[in-house]
Length: 195
Image (cartoon, rainbow, N blue to C red; front, top):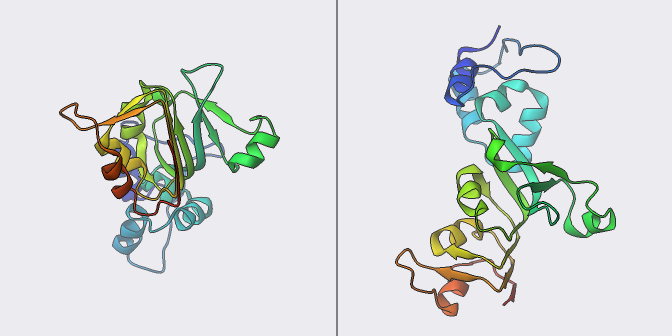
């Protein structure tokens, strides 16, 4: 039997029930008040904490369905797909991206929590990524051959230490180009910048 909070969360996700491979989730008997557990489920403090909670109990994923990924980039062969990877960039390169999962972000129902790197080289995916991001804590951010709005840039680089901008432009909502000093000011943790 599902907890009432989990069933309410399922309805909020625009699909009635998560289909689990080994059957439906069971009612949990917590040593704390249900309202405290619900608050913890809805407000994860770190990606590692959320991942541990979701791996220990289906309730946490049902209450706040988030996929934590260290790396999001685009398939160089088929630009309509994104590549989600659990490995760091250098490790993925050694494996020739065979460790990556190919996914169509348009069909993804859950939010993404990006913790490692985010590379964008397809203009059409910027609005999709904006709607799919739960939190972007990417320490490496790259944009290639696209135009991006300054608000989106700030959202995606709030944790970035390494930023690469290659043949791309960053603009305000009124289409004015953002100056380099404003770009640098907007990335508080910046250690390496490549333009």
